[in-house]
Image 1 (cartoon, rainbow, N blue to C red):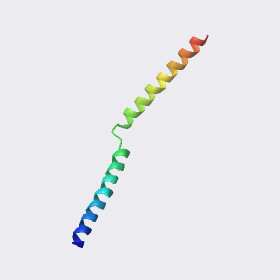
Image 2: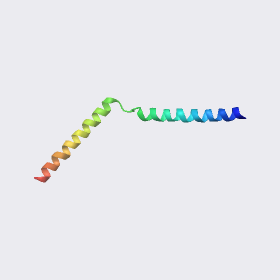
Image 3: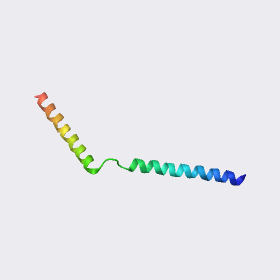
Image 4: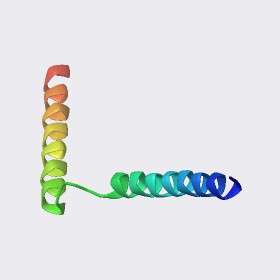
Length: 60
């Protein structure tokens, strides 16, 4: 009876530990490649420049 409870507790702790570890690894893992990230960042910079230049023209 006590051994059954120990086994249940051990299984629960094991599930929590590995579940949390799996969650953390999943959050850290990047699905996008570095080239995709770099091209997206360049696109964002281009859009920022376009918006900034448009604001400058509108204010004149």
